Length: 416
Image (cartoon, rainbow, N blue to C red):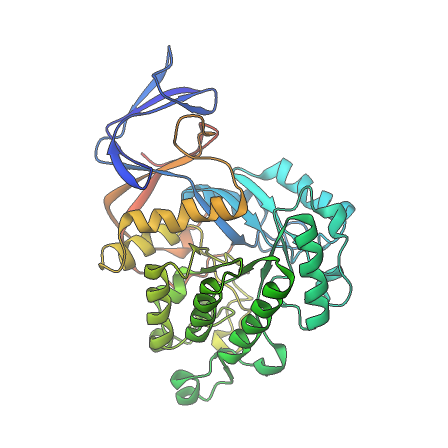
């Protein structure tokens, strides 16, 4: 593709610039290529493509919830050009043979770049390590997401192996012994409605353990979907102590708290939306750099699986298509952070930590998206391209619409 994009404000080097974007053969170039197709994006903003290091694409094994094609179509519509796919699949990618089934699905159906995680343990059962040596070349990182490694000795061995392989361990931190069948945060809403609660300690106790192990082993460590104020403080202290740790949080933890819950499956996720003071701690963590990046934890389920209210629905919501407008509206327009900071959290930091290509500087592979920040609309989960329609932001009035997404210079989504 040879293309020239004029008129937009382009994010580069931490600021927005009134400069064109030139594409030639899938790469960003510094001068307009001969024969370039012209696009006039007056009043739009161009960003590096968003990168989400925590998504569930469900294939292979659970294509009744999502397929590689539908999940990555949702990603493209949301402005994402790179996603890292979690390993809770069937078969679990715990060997080269099993990973190849996922890679085949990626080659067949992916519209954006998909980087698979390798499982930390065989079958994600938390007992024996996966074949990490065989997985390392093609796995972006290692995780047993959705389960959390319960045994400290197993996690220590996994971290030592990951350190030797030069790979990140990304952890879903959850002490199963403390969850006790909970379905919402163990707080005021749970008590008022007679629901079993999930205490914050179930998260932060395992964060505390893993940070100690990361310091001991020297492993590069990443904490998934941080939701509790205690976790934020533990990670802040660990960074100050020189531990090689990064973390993510998700849009729903930043924009919602337990006082906004409704008894609908679209509000049920793991970890749960917590108390207002937890939400405030997460916002503070964004501003001071404790929280490095934003990830959706896109976890689609069928309508039936999400129809049991807070008590009986499965955990997980769809996030790729709602993330940017919800965050732009709820954080940037609300004055919590700048637009530049949001792009750093959604584009720059995840790429840097996980080694993902793509961008909009000369020499980059041309992965980018464009947004109309003046466009106003209402989020409607029923119209998602994802097969999972459950979003806690359903009906939210937002501003900021993705109108164009490209991977290697080729359009994968446009709504002009």
